[in-house]
Amino acid sequence: REVFPDGILYASRESHYSVFKAARMYRMGCIKVNTLTSGEIDCADFRTKLLQNKDKPAIINVNI
Image: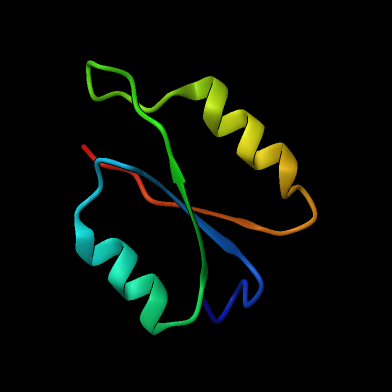
């Protein structure tokens, strides 16, 4: 947040609710990325959302 104050957090819809709660607490922009039925991130949706906001840094939350 300090390095990219205008960055947008990208997280899959399957991410734990605390990821989105923390984003709200820090007043960060947050975009939920769709997932496939397998639980994997939908790369096409992710790409579309990144391109819609290409003027702002991307902060990416990764679930393993």
